Image 1 (cartoon, rainbow, N blue to C red):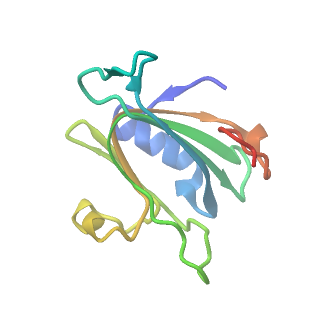
Image 2: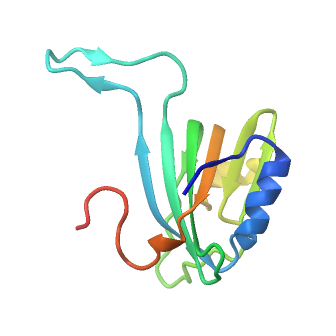
Length: 148
């Protein structure tokens, strides 16, 4: 399970081809963390710069790979739009591209940064990202955090 860097639109094309454009997939889990915390003496530690990271587990109804994990680093935006009740939670196709050093991923092929303010879709933008095949992470078992 070695990581593969996503640093260009060519890298984006490779992950999109490998995972079938996210067709017939679902966002299974998300884990978000930062590099700031409160110390035991109650003072706050907070480094300068972007330090938010997000790990995302996707599963899909196709093999090779059937699951991937993407690690977004130096996250600039994260918008989670849960699937509304009575709607089918399948991602029929995602959009991923790099522009001016920022990687964008959204759970809709027709998504655009101009429509982002409507908050209708889940999307992430980050300055760095990498992905890996985690096909052995299929099923209902949770991989991040608590299992309850």
